[in-house]
Length: 413
Ligand SMILES: Nc1ncnc2c1ncn2[C@@H]1O[C@H](COP(=O)(O)OP(=O)(O)OP(=O)(O)O)[C@@H](O)[C@H]1O
Ligand SMILES: [Mg+2]
Image 1 (cartoon, helix red, strand yellow):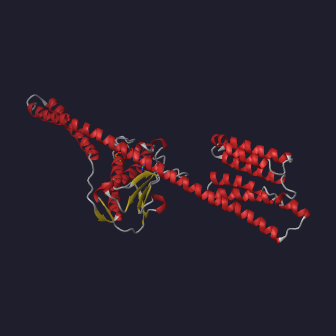
Image 2 (image 1 turned 180 degrees about the horizontal axis):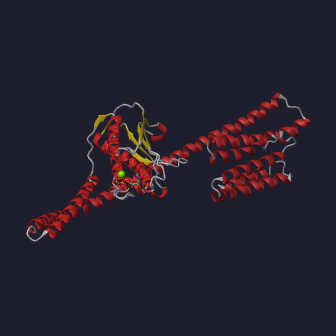
Image 3 (image 1 turned 180 degrees about the vertical axis):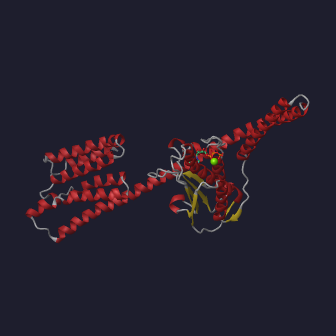
């Protein structure tokens, strides 16, 4: 690519005016800059792009000044395509427009010296306008193409990450289901023995009975954990029915609200009216319940902190925004519903973003860490996806987003 670039610039160098030394120096500078550009962009990701475009605008402007009797008439004016295209590739639509306007302004600045000696005829003005319009047209076409490519790549990366997560969960599920089974059998034996011990030790004193009681209750706890985990690890069989998402969501939220009385947490709903969906209502309600529970737990925390500080820190009651909307076609690629849970809690630290979906990952003292793993599994099974939104600039709270497609063929995964 660099070589081609050099060949074309060399082509420009041997075209008239060949003897103009400034022109040749500017072309050499453009060539050198192009070779260095990648390094500049890597070294300063944010500002590097602005510098790259600016330097190219300056070089293009200088080149125009040295390649025409009347600079504004220079046949080299398409050299401005270089900064314009660079901006279109490195910036968003507004940035591209801004930089193109700047490049056009730099080009038009040669009007002043020209107007000192010549008059501006309408045809010349039309020609100038045409050239500038083409700058913008090219910029917008290229920018649109680049943005679209970038969006496709992001979608692909996201899909890949989700597939990887599903595979990881499946592997973990299989592995631990085996383990859980193995644990259950000895547990049953221990429990049985503890019960016999309790009966046998009726005569031999209360201490032994108490100890036998401990064994029994701890075994129960482990057993419950194993059962919950087996529930998670077992392949799901969906019981599909046609239901209204809003009803499921409201039921899950009412449950959560009931379990956290007096926290002052507000739930704000924004439901779009969508057609009913075919899905496993119990499972999906569980998904909503798990997400709501997490949000409530996250928002209840500041209050605990405030209480620990003797009320010195006044906790602001949390707000949970829950929304249902039709999935934008360009986002999901297929029709469906998007359900969002946006809380005002502390959010999820960047380094934990992927881990939180792993089974047994928890940061809570009494958490098991299965909530999101179950959510992920159920949603995968419905052909949808769930993700923690990465809302740049929004520094508080976590936003979980669930996508559920209208049409899903479970047999095709
Ligand atoms: N809304 C949220 N805000 C902040 N952190 C969250 C939120 N939801 C989940 N997390 C983080 O993700 C971790 C995993 O969540 P998950 O629901 O899987 O497990 P858990 O809530 O810890 O335990 P369990 O749901 O099994 O009782 C949590 O421990 C917490 O650190
Ligand atoms: Mg949870």
